[in-house]
Image (tube, rainbow, N blue to C red; front, side, top):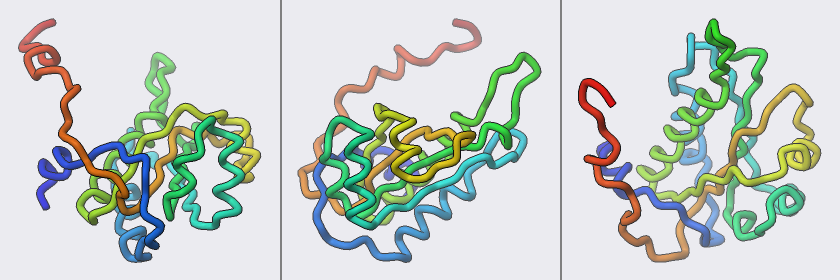
Length: 170
């Protein structure tokens, strides 16, 4: 599958089959995240892979909905801001570094026939407590990973290209 095809096929899925995800597919997805670029190649990202149902249950306290815990795998994407590159004006890039890695992982998951869904609306402190994440580590996003149990529709709510590109100036 070409990357452009994975981009077109990817959808945010909220219902997953209970079918176990093969370890080699999980590792392929994680490798895609590991290989992602990062500012100044600092690689401040870390990923927690959750398959245990008891651990997933603890995550319900961190996010107001429980649909995501029914996926066979949940990946929590974190960053160590102390390891990240900072621009001279103080702008920090750890969130960008994690987002790029997670996008690689999501597209790789699509290539593997797996589905995902970006989740960023969670209580970070509760998530840190539930997963034993050190205080200095930041949780950026999480995604369930598994086989879809819903029909995927077309991407229809994206702005037309003419509305988002600017040639030579704004």
